[in-house]
Length: 190
Image 1 (cartoon, helix red, strand yellow):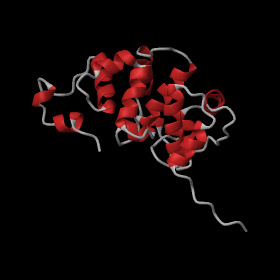
Image 2 (spheres, helix red, strand yellow; image 1 turned 30 degrees about the vertical axis):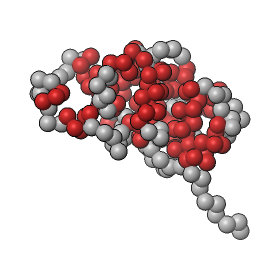
Image 3 (spheres, one colour; image 1 turned 180 degrees about the vertical axis):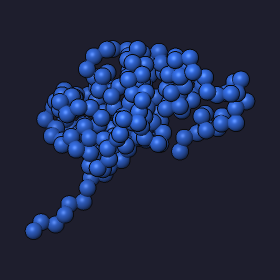
Image 4 (spheres, helix red, strand yellow; image 1 turned 135 degrees about the vertical axis):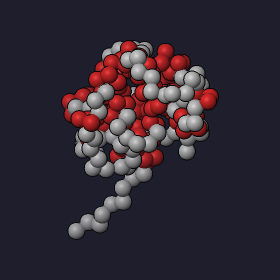
């Protein structure tokens, strides 16, 4: 009987992934997300929230030759039935896509899946810090990212933009500066 192997760290998975990566900016961010996912971090479910065929296509196009099961190593699954806004989030992000296409659709599906998590969006995605998320959003959804000119936390910002697009204003404060929740929305992320 062989001894159990210790799981790799996300950094080790990342190094393995980048050996197969295509070198694109999105490839780097996807490698971070997949590495964290393989290490059991973040909230992304099976196939990162994609259907299995799109998961296979993502791997084939961005990490040719890298073999990976679509089953989440963490065993986490997400219940999209409690996400009534799933289609609205997809349409909202799609509207701001810099380059429509399969890669953008993968990112939209992954971001929407991560929105079901309870941590900051960058953590739920498995990115390594908020700066990486800001860069990913700025690259793929530049007009939307530019709207976050006061550095609101991304998940809150996306949902606030979605609500405003639907004409829903739940905050009773006349402006963010006088709101009691200001530190929760704009404070430093840890």
